[in-house]
Amino acid sequence: MSSSAKTMLAAIYMDGNIEVKETPLPRPDREEALLKVETAALCATDIKIWQRGHRNIAPGTETILGHEVVGQIVEAGDRVDQTIVGTRVVIPPNVGCGICPACQAGWDSYCPDYKAYGIGLNGSLAEYMLLSSSSISRGNLVTIPDHVPTRIAALAEPTSCCYRGLQECELKAGETVMITGTGPMGILSIITARAMGASTIIAVDPVAERREKSKAFQADYALDPGAGSFNEELLDITGGWGVDVVMVTAPFAKAQLQGIKAAAIGGRINLFAGLAGDDTFTGFPANLVHYRGLKVIGTTGTTPREMRMVTNLMAGNRLEQLKDVVTAVFPLSDIQKAFEEARRGSGLKVLIVPNERAKV
Ligand SMILES: [Zn+2]
Ligand SMILES: [Zn+2]
Image (cartoon, rainbow, N blue to C red; front, side, top):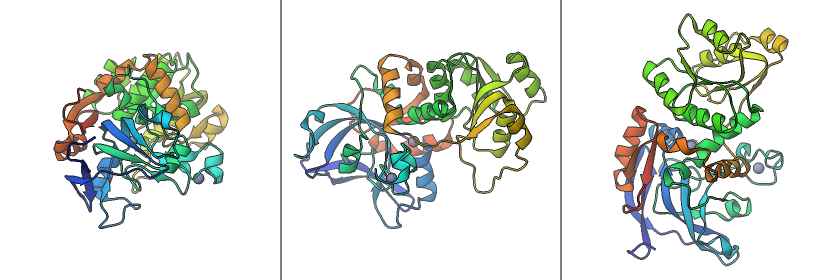
């Protein structure tokens, strides 16, 4: 427990500002639990909230951001199974209501009444995080063995979003995968696709430096989407067939269209990144979809089920390359520097360590 009895340090967000402050240590009620944060990772969502706010965070409300976390449960209310105390866990952040059609169909993260850590619920950019009764009863706690390094465990949430995206594309071992965009989610998708058995992986990014970097993460080829030779190179690589699975992690309609056109007969294309409000998809290639039997899908978020699969892969040392995705580590006290670093986007994932003595 914190030495200063009943307080903890937390990065508090309000109205576009983020500041580290002493704040009361949350006390779990009879159905809640307390998580000691080992490490939290910053996500594009945190940066977006910092810059533009969020419709679920009312002006003038203090909230603790952060939803990518690994930690240890240190306390649980008397109505909670006490065997969870002491376990190391990762947290699927979106907690569904459990009774709506979306939740019952296993689409918890699409629940219209979801509660999410780092948005409606206080999140992980703090020394401790309160786990709500519904997140405990809905299974939004996934245990992760101690031997998984912190840098890898901290990325369980974003990695499981990529796993879900590829899984919904029905990726089969031996298939060819194209990943458009080599930001953090693109790189995590490359690493995950490899662990899921993809044979050839083609990374696509207009920025030469980012494109080349993707090869260090096991992309077999790195193509420039703007090059005149793009289609020819793609057909060359795939023996004239096209790619079986396309993950469009770049938030551009142009990239989505190119992704659909790159797909082989029977190909599956995931429009994984949302588009900015002023970007619209025009010229949908309906005949291509029809005559090639394509499936164009979308996914967002993750559920306990996918997170469990990802922690299993981590435990089996199948996602070792994730540790190289972490390009900066900051103590909680440097939260502003950390947000600046993540906003610049020159690196990949930024980690926050609330306990200054922790080794990451
Ligand atoms: Zn995230
Ligand atoms: Zn629901």
